[in-house]
Length: 387
Image (cartoon, rainbow, N blue to C red; front, side, top):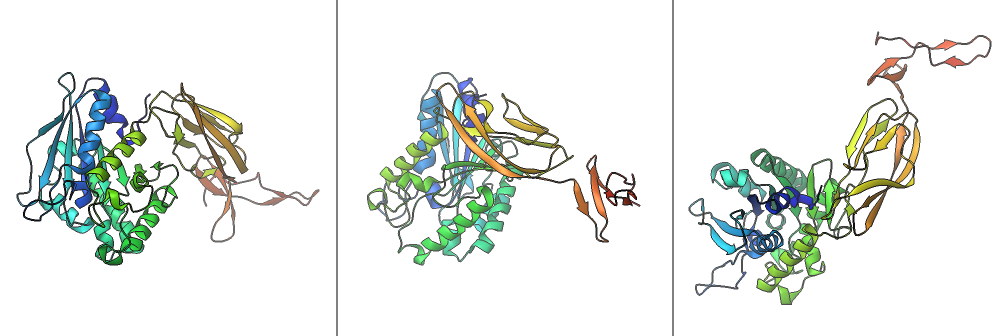
């Protein structure tokens, strides 16, 4: 299987001669405000920002025609499709830009629920990019309010775009003086969100990571600007100029369409207990077929790794600490990731102090018996009911 991170389904479909939709949602930097500076009446204008440019890069990669449309909040409709790149064949990549200026999670939620922001075409997208957070900080959101609101927002989008992969982007770097001094708050919010999703903070390493707990990808797009504010790439203290949007789109394309060495993006393995069945699929970025193997250390006893799918599965048989380095290999190179943890013992205790043993996924109380000759507690004499 070829893996292109969150774009896997879309790119695989386009390369095979099919059509695909990509949906983008967020605030003014997703819409592409100040892409060409200001119009004659001093209002924001947009030439598509990074979503349209990223779409063109994907079209060039797949040699597929790209069409672009953007949301008009005053009419609650989308513009007509415009062809922005022409490839061969009849297949089309449709870029649906649902960015709306000056919006934040609560107002974007209203546009989704009442403003036809997610059309049937957007709902059928193979990938959704979510870039929001700047205005939330401006309107006072803190990590304790922002993170649960963002996770709820992701769940809403998943309910509407049921077949899409989801990629969370950190967008551009603000100047220190803009947004009423909200730059630090914006970074605090995103650090808290990334910690919750992938146990990482700005700048993330690697920039493209996968969250198995939430089934979403994260892409730290601030790294497109070197993680620092660059006035030459910005139209003002908040929005990129045309060069800035192009730099972000080009950088994103290298991360999302990378056919180089794989990077294992599954950050950690789930909890394991002796006697309880375990299964977890590991995920790696990189655009070529991948073979999985154990490079160093050993898997917990009872588990095995599928060399083709990267699925780690089995029933742990031995409690204790483990350390294992998994290698993902393609035709160009390989990438390693070391996982450490502890397999839990099958013993537990209930509220009245009885020792419990795990059998077939259920804990049963132990019927403690003392061996008269040795004085040892026989833990193997247990009841087969919870009475």
